[in-house]
Amino acid sequence: MRIIFMGTPEFAVPSLQAIVAEKEKFEIVLVVTGPDKPRRSKHADAEASAVKQAALALALPVYEVDDVTCSDFAETVAACRADAIVVAAFRILPPAVYEQATLGAFNLHASLLPAYRGAAPINWAIIRGEGETGVTTFFLQQRVDTGNIILQKKTPIAPDENASDLASRLSVIGAQVVVDTLHLIESRSVMVSSQNDALASRAPKLTRDNTRLEWSKPVSVINNLIRGLALKPAAWTTFRGKTMKIFRATPAVHPADHHSVPPGTILVDRGRLYVSGYDGWIELFSLQLEGRKPMEVTEFLRGFRHENESLQFV
Image (cartoon, rainbow, N blue to C red; front, side, top):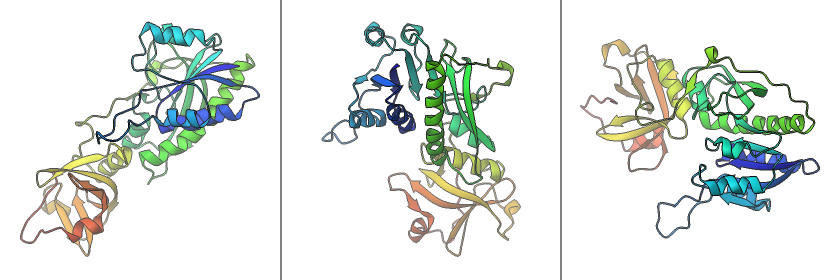
C-alpha cells in the first residue's frame, strides 16, 4: 500500500515511525512537511521540522511545501500514485490534493470529534477543564474537521497534566490509531460514522488575547489556563510593566484572606509565591520574566524585592 505522509511538528513523528515499522504492509512514497524555519541567529542554519528530521533519519523522500494550494504541489502528489494520504498536524488541504489518494485521505486529530474542532484541541480540552480526551481519525472533506469518523481512542486527562505532557501521550496513542486505520483501509473494511454537528465545540487558534491570565477568575479556571498553555505558548500576565509567562502552578490554601486584597495580589511567604484569585490563592512554581530565562520560583524570589510595596499581576 503506497502512502503519502503529511505532518510538521513533533506530534506527528510517532505516527510516521509507526507506519514505517509496518514496512511489510505499507510503503511511504513521500513525506510532505513545512519549509525549514530560520533561527533567531543570522549565523545559524535554518531549522528543519521535526517530521523532516525524522523522515531523513529513516531515509524517506521529503517534499517541503509552503503553499498547499499551488498546482505544482497537487501534481507532485498525483505523480506519487498513492493509495492513501495520512495527515497529522499539517495544513488544511484542498480537494485537488487529498482526492489524489485512490483509497482516501485521512487526518489524525487530537480530540474526540466533534468536540474541539480547530487548531488547538489539546490546549482547549485542558483549558475547559475536561477530564477526558482522545484522538480521532477521519476522512478529509472540504469543511475542516467534519469528515466521517473512522476510529477513536479515549484517554483520561490527569488533574495535574499540562498540554505538553498530554500532547506527548496523545501522539503515541494516535500513532497506533493511524496504523489501525491504515489496516482497515487496506483490507477494505472501514466502517465510518458521521459527526453530529450539534455536539461540536471549537478549539480556536491561540492568540495573545486568549492566553492572558485574568486573576479575577476562579482559581480552578486560572490553573486550567496555565496547564492548558504549558509549556508553549504559555499563559501570561504583566509584572512591573513586563510580560511574565507562568508555566506551572496549583490551587493552594493559605491563611491570609484573599477577599481583603485585589485579584492578582502577590503574597510571598516562607520562600513561596502565592497570587490571589476570585475564590482563593494559587501558588506559582515556574515562570519566565520578559528578557530572562525560564526559572523556578525559588530562583525568581532570590532577586525579588518587594519591601513596602503592594504588588499585583495585571
